[in-house]
Length: 399
Ligand SMILES: Cc1ncc(COP(=O)(O)O)c(C=O)c1O
Image 1 (tube, rainbow, N blue to C red):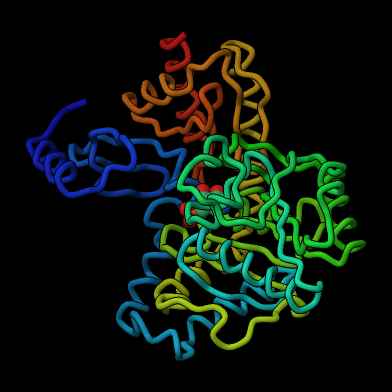
Image 2 (tube, rainbow, N blue to C red):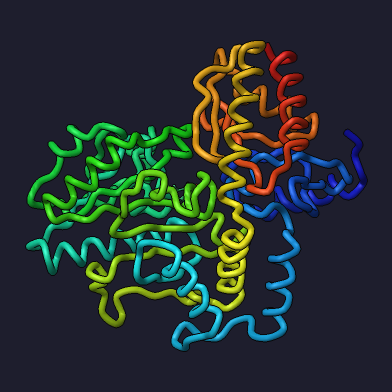
């Protein structure tokens, strides 16, 4: 790929002024359209990461850009202490199209997961004799605040930033009996992702999800679904729980909700809404631009039946990966809708990702021996085929 004079200056500025938290490629991204991103040197990348499963309508979706532009001329920021019309519309579209009754808006997945945990703890304090513990799953990912790092079951995190926030108990994902055994008088909720995305795309079984709902009903405790990665059409339904016909008491959303604009939410059934004034808040929660993004994305997704399209496209991607797998040793092709992963023959993930990047493709390796695909839900068949061609080349070259 070519190099332009602008890049070294940008890299220098980045190194001097950004706190180091991750090693990034040297290319600096400057624009995007649909399934493609361009760097400062005008190199094009086919994007099967899409901001980490965020840009559900692709980069700079015209419908989203138009709506944000229009709203920016009307009201950018009102006040968290005042209602605004966009907030009401966003709340209405989410509650009218889900099994939940009420919503609170925040800015990031970790923030709304914290809110969901606070709501469950308050419910436990008031309705369950002070129960406060939340059962979560090993290898889960719920965000990077201290609370959510404590809730998550990510390997290695148990040793980081001690001391942990107490009150989280971890059990194996898809292990109903272990979950049942972990419930005590202190338990107020069970919290999980319907698909463990960051762990490598592991899908909850129907038996497990139905069993968890039954267990929560039996014990009078709450089921919290973290749908930050699985919500908003990603799994082929508007919300992941619809794949199971199992309703959560609390659900969290982020990522795809704003189609690239930062916004997140937790939703709850009426009987769980025990917050009083002052229990929850945030300067930007319900901010009009973010609310416009949210209701525009969700309405567009419903009008254009995009979840259904994602399900069909995802099935076709999995079929094609199985075929490629026969040639190249990919196994365990899994996932739902357009959240898909495969296992590699060995720990070649980082090399495959790097080779693909050099050849204009963005994919992710959630584990050393796995690849994850999370393209725009509007990705075309031709773009899927282009991705597979580059991937085939990367696998051949690396192995
Ligand atoms: C399931 C899940 N929960 C929570 C989060 C954290 O969201 P955020 O990075 O917006 O705080 C993520 C992010 O990857 C996620 O996948």
